[in-house]
Length: 338
Image (cartoon, rainbow, N blue to C red; front, side, top):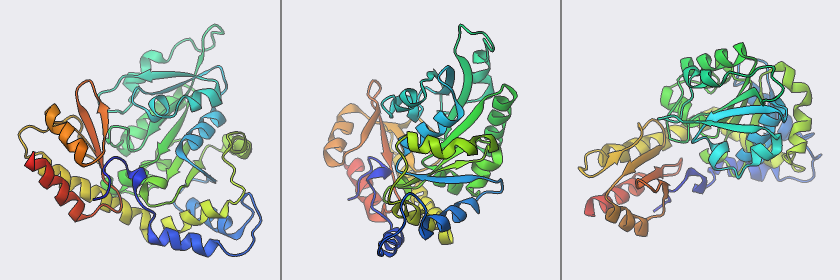
């Protein structure tokens, strides 16, 4: 049975592996001056209506650090949900890379709103205080919830009205777009975000992300920020070739829809069990719930998963592009047997 701990644990899609093998042909100019990267850059740009720059990077932490470094100065504040990935899962890398103060905001569902941010829009122009500078959101959120386009537009309008910029961490943006039956653009760039991490590693790629920059004022210095964030690959073709495969014939959508469908199948079975309590709405490929402690411990012996909030016994299960019906059936049968 495949892992339900994280979609990071999934395998590489055969079409992506095939693209990598085709890219592994002789020598090519390094650092992105190769035909695979030129092609992939155009493929990414075609996903979005707004003019943008696309820069390929190694991983999500690096992409977030790079984007936030690009839009802030060390005296700025970066706002995020208290469950935000940059606050809890990146070992302080964005704070170290930007020098900024990270202001975490409590939320019930992992999503920020203008109303939650409004109390922190203070001390503008006061030199004794760090200045509001950027807002970080993730799509999907760390709690599996999804921002609707109108929610993102409201956040972006609020941020820009106060002179702030917005970075979207789209590590699971494919799952969000698939769930809402919208394009990648409609759940990100078209809503007004300044930068986006277009994620792929969690959805069938071997290991590659792309920082998409929409704000024209940020484009001039973007490549310097990538280099300084240690995210400029010498053999760039092995990152970029993955994205061409990912975005061709909507492979990204096929993979995300499957992961979401497997999560829905698991949810439909678990919600019928009397001692399973879901702690978050099931909107993507992540499930958060609580069972009696003794059952959770036995389940942990059967398959590894992460406790999300050990204080209350909250656990997280994640489905992937390669999760099978048999995987789901096996897990359901074991939990029912408890």
